[in-house]
Structure formats: C-alpha cells, structure tokens
Image (cartoon, rainbow, N blue to C red):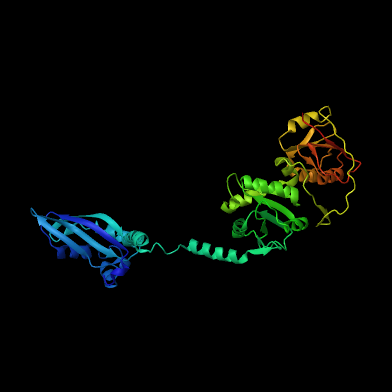
Length: 401
C-alpha cells in the first residue's frame, strides 16, 4: 500500500487447493477472476494503483500434493466497500490448474486496535508516568476559591468580628459561632454571616440584630445549644437553625447547609424548644423597616382557661406536637399545620376561621394576624409578651394537663 497510515481495515481469508500452487498463482487468480465482477469503482488493479488497497500478501505451503495458506489484503475503503471486496474473494474457484476454495476468516478494524492500544497506554501513563504531586484541576480550583474567600472575609464592629462582605448592606444576616463557619458559608456563596465568637455575645451584635432579620445558625452540639439560649435572652433574633447532631457548621457541605437553613424555626417556637423562662426580645415592622418599639404600655390582662374549655380536646391532642389547628365556628378542623407555618397559613387561608389552637407561644405577631383574619379565639400553650390586644380576639393560654 502506498501509505499504510491510511489503512482502515484488513481482510483475512484462507485458501486451499487440490494441487500444488505458489503465491503468484493466487495473486493472479484474485486479480483475474474479480476483474469486471464489481464494476469499475471496485476494480482491484485500479484500487491498488490509487493506494486504496495495499499489497496482497499470500502465505502458501504444500503438503501431500495439496496447498493451503492465508490471504491478507489491507484496505482504506469504507466499511461497505471493504465488505463487498472481501465477499468477492469467495467467488474464486480455481487457482492455476487447481480447484480452489477461499473462505473469509475475519475483518480487522485497524482503528479499533489502535484505540485499544491508546487506552492501554493511557492507563499506564496516568498511573505510572504522571507525578502524583501534580494537583488535579479540582484541587487547583479549590485553592483559588480558598484564597478568594480569605480575601472576601472582613470584620464587623468594634469587636472586629469575622464577617462576610454583605453583613452591613443586607437586610438579613446569619449569626454563626466562629471564623471557620463564616468561611464555610462564603465557600457556598453566603456572604451575610457574622461570627459571635462563642457563648459571650459581643456588644456589637446587639444593635445589629435590632436592624436586621436574624437567623442564628449554630453547631449541633452542646456549645451550639448554649449559644442559642444566650442569644434568645440577649439579642433580637428571628429564626434558629442548627447543624445536624454532632456536626459543626464548618463541616457541612452545601446541601446540608441549605437544608438546615430551610428547616429553621421561628423564635416563638425556639422559646419552647430551648425552655426559656422569658420571652425573647421581639421586633416590629413599620412599612418594611425594622424598628424597636420605644414606649411600651402595661400589657392588658388576658384570659386564661383550663381543660374545661371548649378547646380542651384540641389542646390535649396538640400537646408536644408543635402543631396548630384552624377551626370553624363548630370547632371543626379546617386545616392543621406546623406552628412554624402558622403565620403564613393564617394569611393565606380563604375559609372563615373562628378559632386558632396551637402548641406554641402566643405572640403579638400571631395576634395581629388573627385579628386581621377575623379570628375570634386564639388559644396557645403559653402567653408571650402582648403589648396591644385587639378587642375582637379572645386570647387564652390553656394548659394541657
């Protein structure tokens, strides 16, 4: 063949005759008996002149007055043309003076063989020749991201608390325990976290929490629990989120962080969860801006009833479930939801709600929403700090015992 690099396939066949023959006899028979058989496009002589098939290789031997051997023909034709050419060999029935029988044995795809060699060689190169100290592309990317995160981290307040770059500008912030937690959140694009530095809450955190919607996000251990309890007493937080039990925030992957923040509980519920004796400091909203209520009048006296009330059955069934029920005028259940979703469910409900019974703290926010929805009875497990009592709503803290 003029250029062996162009070989795509190799035709291999066997030949046997009833008499003695030599190589030139076989080659001559192949050219002579296929001439004109396949048309001018597949004429062997023309194909060989143009380099589309290579040299016909014949290995022949004789024994006992008979001859046998192999025929090999390299081809740069396409798959179909090569198959036609290979099949034509089996039409040759005489070689010289002898009766002959040619049988096609196999077709070799040269490129497939090359691909197998490449794969085997690449495995060796990858495992033996590469220096193991060369970092993978992911390691390089992680290093770059790490350096960017370190550059992004800043400090907040007079205490120089580790913080993300958006803490000052964002309407919402996330309180975490330490610098490593801030870096972990930065790794996943969360840039509004600030570290409190442990159980001694820094002074600069207190005024910051008054201005923002705050989520406390702590480790899933005893230390994280203590920080939550102190924040509930000292700071104006809105939600509480925890890492899975036994894990620190800095150990979490992105999916775990997103899940934990989505499962955050409102501070009203956290009061019960963490057994706080006092209601945490709360915030009110005036046209979307968070401000502190300056003057507080003496809270009005609210009603307290026991299990003898008409809601006793619901109170007992909801005890320790963190659940809430929206009731109609006959105290039938319209809808049952988790306490954390109570405010949104009240706002969205289109039915006429007569009463709301829930296993949680009655807060000013829940009371105001109930009044807006025309609720007549609001029954909770514990009374929170109520500064304004709409006369249209009867408020009751009912014991389940």
